[in-house]
Image (tube, rainbow, N blue to C red):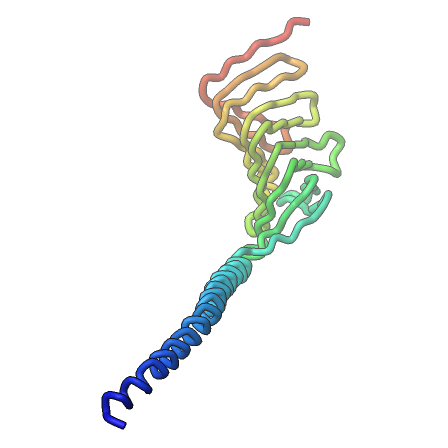
Length: 206
């Protein structure tokens, strides 16, 4: 047999073998590549989910936990020994500063053990136990226990000194008449009230 004959006899068979190997390779790749792509997608999704959970856990650790109280009551005495009470619908104590209490619809009563205690209410407030001061905002209403009622938007109640002050416009009404001012100060549980700035009074006639 000549070399040309040997080449002709083995050539087609070799081509068929190479085609079969290539066909098996392509068939295998068609199965492997989609599986590899799906595995890559799952890996990326898992990494994103893990990162998101890690961030949420980190934020949860950094966010202070508030201690909430329903219908709380805080009692104490001022410098003259008169009792006071601070109440609210709900209060929350900040985990970062346990002496700072946020109040929802607070009420402050001064001189509870006297015949005519004064009361202050508002939409919201903050009580700091370090200085025993209550800062009230939103529809502040003050009753001095003697028949006078005052309306304003902010008030600072010093439970230690028993005073109420505010740098906001006030409208007052009582047995004698009405009064308006730009700021005010209430001392001695409402026995002394000072009005400042743009004071206008209307007295009632008997």
